Image 1 (tube, helix red, strand yellow):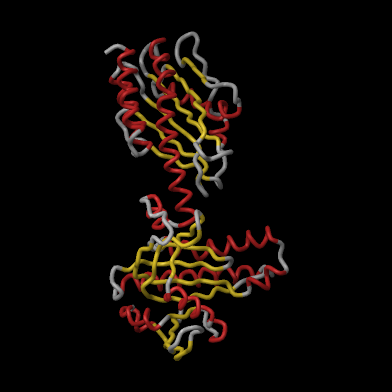
Image 2: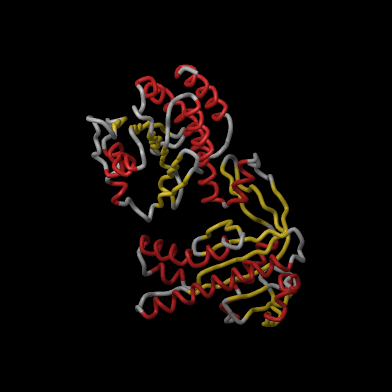
Length: 401
């Protein structure tokens, strides 16, 4: 097969990939395997790009012959390493007008001006090439992304002029497929971040019409910070937001780590659910209760540290309830909210509102207690109480934690 034929075959394959929704690693693996099959000798390839995610700034993928693709996520907190700052990737990013770097690693013209090139030479690489292909994600104004992709050859003479021409022709085609997959990834990331995973899946499946509701049985956690209003009155907005985020870091992971869904942040409150297939699903109830207790313990431990440092604190109140709710779209016109509504949500809010009056940070509803049969020995009754707006009294419980 000639190099020109290989370029055409790979281009046709990329068109099919552009219509698919596979992963980046499969794309890079298939691309490099086809390069080698077409007579373009690639021993190693790296592909990197920015993404839009609350904790991940960029993603990298490394392909090596006869090995699985390695995936590396560069977090916003980690920051750039010295290895990255000394790399050809950083050089291309810092020099916007430069789109390509080519370095022979052997022979009289060998150029090893980046530390990684010495490492690659020791691994048998003879020729190195990296390209930058900028692109913008459609409809995301101000979000500039693009693809950085490198190829390393171990052929005795490196890349021939025909191979270099082929890689230059194929890089934009690969970037086009990448931009399509990046747009889908960004869409999923944004939906997961702002409405939660389950709600995001429903939106992507087409449930975007007002009144489109899905009925579910769920354990409901209504969590609220006591003392938020008083503290916010004497704390500036930026510091209050940072403090609130620190508190949320203590209560959100216990829910997500157990498969729960964070449906909404409401000022200083959080609404979370654990979906039930059966209202008597005692294991799900135990999971929800364990999440509530871990969140309370996390906040208590952090408050202890803050008190020792003379820092202000907020205490957490949690109501745990169980019932049948509607999960879907509410709103007006083309501005909708994907959330949980129904009597059970209102009752959970009313139960949480009794926490201060009853001097308990954890309150459990009668219906939840009835379903959580494997937790019966842990529950302690705090008596029967009238919930505001609810016609009948109900027995409430707590747990020693």
